[in-house]
Length: 406
Picture 1 (tube, rainbow, N blue to C red):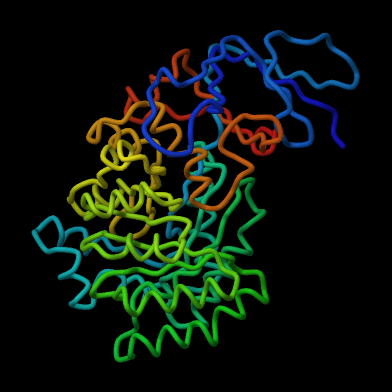
Picture 2: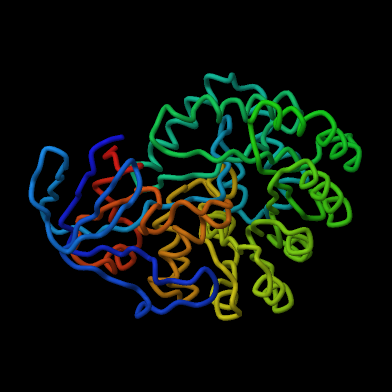
């Protein structure tokens, strides 16, 4: 057991403990503690103190110089951070007027990334993942979900998930692996047979090797339709996997399925209408907005304001991937979503911390409450609103993972 550690003082501490998991939030709901300290014991928050305790041999005191605002570490709950090559050609085609669906239909899009990822070595994939994770950590992301999906074939999906496992621990950031073998169907294969192949030959191996505890599927007409996706998700859930769904990105149906099968989250939702919004709000499924994909594809944002007003739990994530969302900057994307969808600072903060953690089924992070992981980030500012006022370009200059400065 390590000695207790006292870190501070911080000009403002936002523990986020007064915010609800679901529904709209006003900035008046935020608890803002001024000139206080955080006490950490064994990597977890113990308490927040209003004055510095007396020094002793059994207590480590870390004094912070200058004004800083402290919040919980960020959680990015939807990324595709393992890939080979890039899709700059696709991006140029989209700027020239081609749609995402048109590019995919001609062999570009996801299929292009699949080809390049299959050709890449495990070392190349690992190096790329570590590079991206290092940047995320510097930007204040202390937990990141990482999907497979650019392998498709079981041996290549295994390579990606083993890459994630091998990269975990090289940096003080938690990587949460998700199997997205059901990203699209390989050309020439029957979709039902392909999903049956994943259930029979891949998912048991993942469970045996501890490579993933989560399963995802892309529900769209040119990927997997609802009637095909439902039995796949139910079989994955029966095997003990948590499930999530790429839902309502271009057409509806995916979010209804996500609620029906009890998915932890329904992600994208750019096409969601009043019916889908009500279904999500009345469920325990977290709605995940991916503003990076809207920016990358030049399309509408997830109806975040309507989801919150209806009572849904809204998380915000980057969708960091080589095609539709190459930026990978959570603070910038969340700030832009906020101004376009008229979100409060409290709603943005909740969406990139504890609500994002809920989308991953994690209950031990996202707030600075007693017993929670001491994942914390400090910004060199005196007013928390400056983060979003500067559209996410002010980054933290101190990041703690489990109470250790990284």
